[in-house]
Length: 288
Image (tube, rainbow, N blue to C red; front, side, top):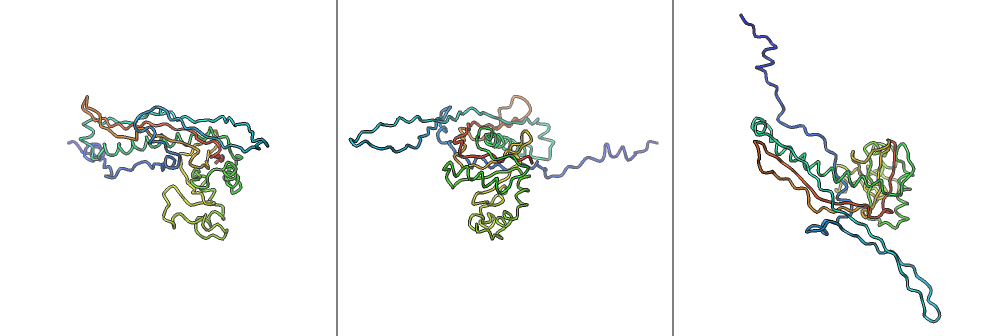
């Protein structure tokens, strides 16, 4: 007589049960696109390049006693934003998989496609660190003197006091939280004389998941996508005009025509980006 063993049951009669909630990968927050100079409107209808001219400040000069003077002939510069980043992300779901899955796979993968396109923009903007000429001295962790020095660079460049931001890798968020002065500012237990600048963003109602306070009036952000290369985290302090982004074709999700028994979902975007003002950003490299 044949005996049905536990092994037989587990292989045939005991199906693997999957949770009904898909455990999505934790996705880093996207922070850069909304904090740089946007030029979308300039290429929304057509165009492959944006030329952004800069008009320099002019000096004054002494006029001669007879009213004579030598006219100036300034040499101006420009920055080009080339709309060349045409990117896509897609997935092909066979009909049998769609039919037998208990999950809405098209919806799940549509979210992942959108995330992939967002990460591309984020990484391109954070990658502009390599073109900025101003940087503080490499340190194991960020310190108060490093931040003060970086702010000084922006002040000396006459960068506007508004729309300044700092972004760090999570390791540097941890380092900042070990500095008592900053903890007091962020928590609202502030006796540093910087009450307005250090107001807790949670209390002010403008905090978001990737912001954890203000330091010297500048919002502080963290993101796992801050570039880490050559053993260094390329943390940044910048003013909005340091970088430009032009989205000509915003991320769009489409279902392609069927050529076989499957559904192809594809997302695409078309954009350009560039360093706009070199003096309006500072790299704060750390080895952690």
